[in-house]
Structures are given as C-alpha cells and as structure tokens.
Length: 353
Image (tube, rainbow, N blue to C red):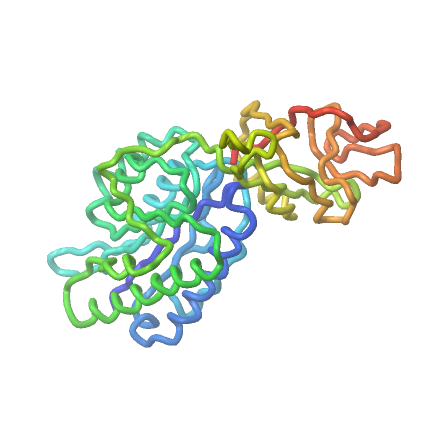
C-alpha cells in the first residue's frame, strides 16, 4: 500500500503559549480521532510532527495513523523557521519512497506549517534548498497565526499561505475540521485516481481564515504584538512564561482629540518544562527589554501560587515572591536579598518570542 505522508511543522515559540498552542494541540487530537474512523485514511495516512522554536526537533517520527497518538507540545525560545525547514527536508528525504519507472512509490507528501512570527535565524540557505528541490513536489499549506508575518518569505515556501488572525477556540476547531475533511477527501481521491494534488478551495468558506495576497508584499516584520517574560518559581524551581498581548484604546485624558494609547494586557502565566524549553531555545542574548509601565496587570505564580510572579533580582532574572516575606532567594543565581515593592517603572528583560 502506498503511503500518504502528512507532516505538521509547528512553531512552539513563547508567543504561541496559551490559547494558540492549546488550540493547535487539541486540533491535532481531533484530526487523529476523526481520521481513525475513516477506512481510506487508515489504509494510507502516515503522520509526523516536527516542532521548532530556537531549535527544531522531531516530536513524533513518521508512523502509520493506526498507532499514532498526539503528543504534548513543548515551548521554546526563538523562531528558527530555517532550522525547522531543514529538519523537515531531512525527514522527507529519509522517509519518502520515491517513484520510479518500475515502482509507484509514495503519494505526494502533505505539509502543514503553523507559525505566528518572523524567523529569528538565518533561514535563507534552507529556503533556497526548499525552492529548488522540494516546493513543487510537496503539497504545502502555510498558516500564519496572527498578523505578524513576512508574506514574501512565506511565498518562498508555498503559494498557499493563509492568515488565521484569531485566538477563538471555536475558529480553531472549524479550521482543524477543514484539515481533517481535506485529508479524508484526498485519501479517497488518490484511491480512485492518480491525482495527488491537494484541493484547498473549500478553505475559503471559513470565516476566520484568509488567503494572503502574496502580490501585495510584506507586512511589518517586527513583532510588536506580544511580550513574553521567562520566570522561575522560588519554591518549586519550575519555569513559567508570562504572556502579554498588545492593546490599543482611546486615551481618557485626551479623548476629545482622538488620541490612542497602546500597551500590553496580561493573557496569563503558564507553567513550562524548563529542560524542554532550553532544548528548543536559541542560546543567544537578545538584550531586549520592556518597561513595566507598558504592562497591564501582573499575575500570581502558576507553579506555587505566590502572589507576585514578577520579582526582579539584581542578576536581571525574574522569579516569584511572597510579599509577606522580606527576604527572598533568587532561584536563578541563588542569592538571598531583601525585597520590597518599587515605586517607579523599570525595564525588564523580555524573551525573543
């Protein structure tokens, strides 16, 4: 039986934390559950999941649908799309049984790429390789989550680039249902014909998905939409990410003039596995900061419940603190100091996103 290989290349950078990555994870689970009830898909579909942040890795190697179980998606720092594409190409070379004059080989692979930001690595050589050797031979769909994309860059990967500019879980559910239905339809079509090009026309019926007009050029390539902070629990030594999303609203002080104020509102604080985070993160010092005056609200610690999740050590790191105790020990540098609430605003280090 000829395989229909399907690859998911997923951005797991810090800016994906919260509802985006939770929706992608539940979406993958729904795809697998639905496909396992389809006899055509069970016979042909093989799935692989590759993730990338500052680094890339194969999370689930290519395996047949019947034995596939959706993984828990990790989080890392950075958006190394080039590393992800390079690993994808290596996996395609390793796994794909090519056609020949005497052997039919596998069906044309399908690749779904999800990303929410601009790459932070040197990706050009990998995209050149992709354009030259893979682009025309792979059914590729690129999904940009949010509005921070470089359309000219994504055009080099695929002609099918879609903007998914919402965090509504219901919209994610509809979108992953479309992916499931398209795979089912495709597996039936290839069983009855030799046409293995993916039909994506029905995606235009989804309200929250818009095909990007690649002829219009780039959108801004600097991510100004989220702020993420890396913290460590003083009590459990577990890591956490604090995520803020950009907002814009009328200024009360200058309402008559139509002035707008911008800042970042808290989405939440999320516990992470620090070892996994480091294994997927770029080992670089980006030296980027955000002023606390730009941040609206501060969370409690998601690991131990300490009231303060943004205490700043003299080493520059963020950790949680109990305001009832004057003496605090930084879990990063292990120095013990006396802490109190500050009166002014300060710059704190943000992660690369």
